[in-house]
Image (cartoon, rainbow, N blue to C red):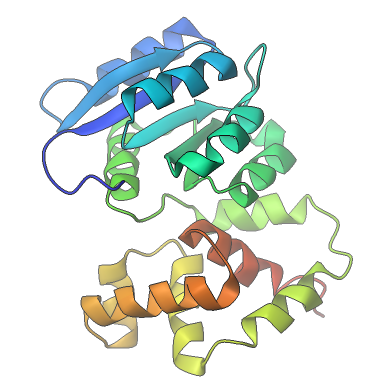
Length: 219
């Protein structure tokens, strides 16, 4: 459901009316983005998304009635691209959101141009992901044997596929990975699709989490 031409259709879900108004102002105007719906809680978000079929959803985690995580899980079969809105006091919730298929997350104090860039990237099938933030999130979760399990999963990749996966984990675009590993953008896209299939991941964020988890509990 990626938007490749025309307006990028966005739904904003946040229980704070001021936040919704601020995001609408940031994304409005001549930005190539159209706000097609707003929601003040998770249940309303699910209804609005299914009614409007947006390209991207900006979803707060903490909302009444149904929180953002429950809404994300409910929307998972719909294949909608969701960017989670959060603050770092909800680290474990964000990690769970990414595991549920969110295409990334933004802090609520992210600069306006960065929010717009994130929406555009996610609409075209990429991710909005800070590698340093992901490492911080994972640091809040007890490692147990997760590191070893992730390394076993990543062992299915060829060295070249692992290079591309590392680029994904650093939040790089296909073009940036292309330059780093010296292959065409089209080849990078092919590799990313192959990596997703091999690892059983639904999006790039889940690949990034696996790569970062593979570094856990190592001396």
